[in-house]
Length: 213
Image (cartoon, rainbow, N blue to C red):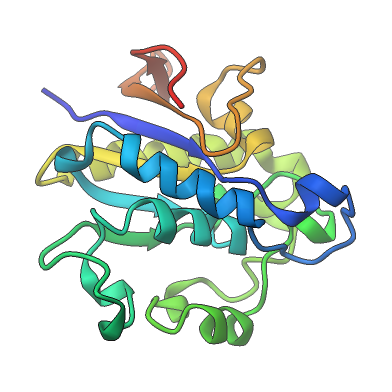
C-alpha cells in the first residue's frame, strides 16, 4: 500500500504576531518553538517517516528541526546537541514548497545566510535564484508549482523505503497543494493524505483524517 503524505503548517513566526510583512524571512517566535516541540511530541507516525520535505524559508526549516529531531538523521544537527538519530529520515529542502506571495516575509534568504543559520544542512543543493519570485516560483504560477510538487511527492512515495512523507510548508501555498481552498490549519497543525493520479494524469491529495494538532 502506498504511503501517506502528512502536510504540516509551520509554527508561529515573528511576522504572524507583529504583522510586519516587510520583515525578510522571519524566524519563529518563542511560542512557535514551543508549538513545534509540541508537534513533535504528539505526532503519531514518527516510525513511518522516511523523508521530510520542507520549504527552504527560515520558519519552515526551524519548525522541521525543532519538531522532528526524533525522526531526522543526526547529521542535520550539531554533534554536541545530541539531537537526531542514526539512520534517521532524510531532510530535503524543496523550493517548490515556499509561500505563494512575493512579500519580503515570504521570500527566502540567499545561500550564505542559510548556511550561516543552518550549517548542517545541504543548502548548496538549492537551485540558483530559487528565492526570486519569477517563473515557476512567481505568484501567478502557484497552481503549476503545486502540480509539480504533487508529482515529485508521488515519485518520492514510490521510492520510499518506509512509506510516509512529512511536508512542511505555508498556509497559503497549502491551499493550492492540497487542492482545498478552505484549509486553514493552525500553526504547527497537520493533516494526512494519500496521493493518487487523476483522470488527466496529474496527482491529487486525498484527505484521510481530520484536523490534527
